Image 1 (cartoon, one colour):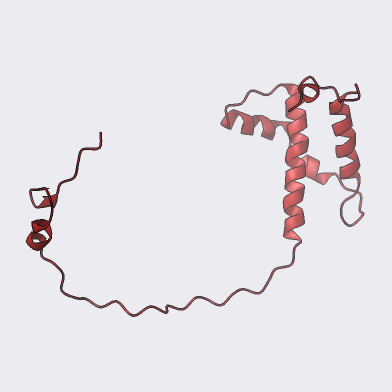
Image 2 (image 1 turned 90 degrees about the vertical axis):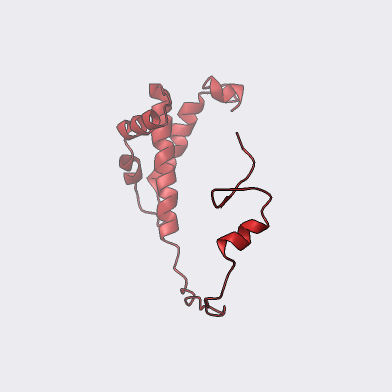
Length: 130
């Protein structure tokens, strides 16, 4: 975040929050179909933003809550755009190309422990980790 963004002024000396609000209002005015909208902004209210901020243990002032309300609405709008993407045909289920499992004789516990550098009470003993 630049110093200009941090103090709320745009690089040209104007108010960046006002510029963002204007951009958000223009973006909400029409959707991809050209219809007048803005219902996405209603999908996220300031109380929801405050709740999410509390869960994340982040303190937000009123200006930040307003900005994040708009940003969350934009994110939800992007997800709605993704919902419009046509689905592709599903791939067929994968078939098992491996050989079937077969039960075979294995080492006994004593035979396995015979090669271990250390064992204790019938188990492998490893180095202490902590």
